[in-house]
Image (cartoon, rainbow, N blue to C red):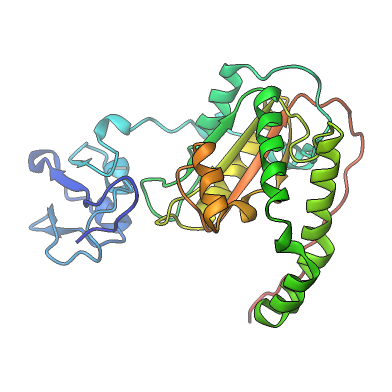
Length: 306
């Protein structure tokens, strides 16, 4: 048995080098699939795993002697690396200051983002936690303002063909079906968004992605944990902030290119491989303005259970 993703349908292969095993049991402790056990003071493969090895690599990473190797599900012993020391990581003050500095930037200098910076953003985002390995997150990269504008213009043409979706008769018809909150969202946000995107693009003003020099669309597959693209996109924003870029997440594109024949054609044209339950566009670039102040934000609620 194995948990399927778009990238693999097989479980990982666990190989044990018995002569290297000291019987410390660390690998058994971290394997939450119960794929391995201690038997006669040596690690052995279990007959009763929950799913079969998912390729998280925890057992291989924790083993102090290299007695366990995992192959398949896109990993192997070659994927191991030594973790940076605590002294080489950001402390709380450094991290919170980075978080506080990030603001949503929509005004960019006419300056491209070099490919080396793009690779660093991707390398950082790849470290994001995921619901199930291997990652099923896909990334569409638009690496110039010409490409982001072309995408935005095509998206506005697509919206023109979808204007019935925000018509009064359709919203009235759907209100009892999708409920009060969705009805209010469509009336107060989605319908005005259609209007402002289309009318401004007709005047040569791009309010879809602001002619950013770089945009990335993080999305999943039918197998993806819905949180994974959002977590990866968030990581990418903070990595970019650390590299001197401004960022902004765009929520107005992803939901509108998921369903229906026109959406399928749009995704195919732009090499978007799958419809995805969750996804997020992020734009990046060198900020054309400088903020000196931030805004304190709050959660809707925080509850400590007794």
